[in-house]
Amino acid sequence: MAKTKRYLVATEETQGERKNDFNWCGVEEPVYFGFECDGGSVDDRCGCKRAMSGVDTAKATTTMRVHEVDKEELTSILQRLTTHFEDGWKMTREEALNEAEEQVKEVLRIAEVFPPGTIIEKRGRNLQARRAANG
Image 1 (cartoon, helix red, strand yellow):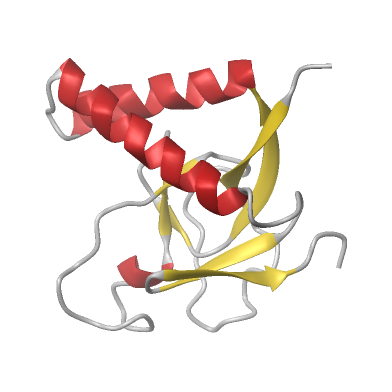
Image 2: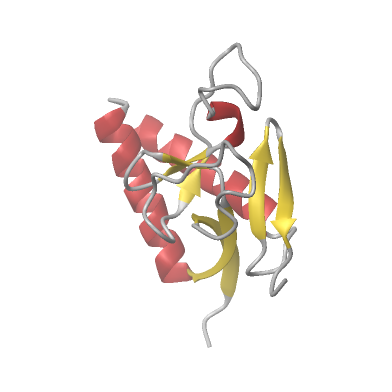
């Protein structure tokens, strides 16, 4: 069996537990840390301080699930995110690849802290379990 790692994906699970939840990503779409406004608060109308962005849609979600990925899926996420930065943010291929690698490393680092299936929420700089795996 291929060795797996943990990554965060968008989920509808627990949506609505907070009155300002939203999910405009595809279900199980891999996510990354999008850009945040300089001002505002976690619970303001913008939502950027409580959301992560989808790799494919570039849309946001306030709920993420810890998901196991194999090496092939992780490579695909890296490639898709690189293309996203290249096309959407007009970065050079090298800049896009560097940014994608940093983003993927950070999401992997955080996801490894939680058991697979855990629902995560972002509250400013903090990512925390909203619901434990199988809970």
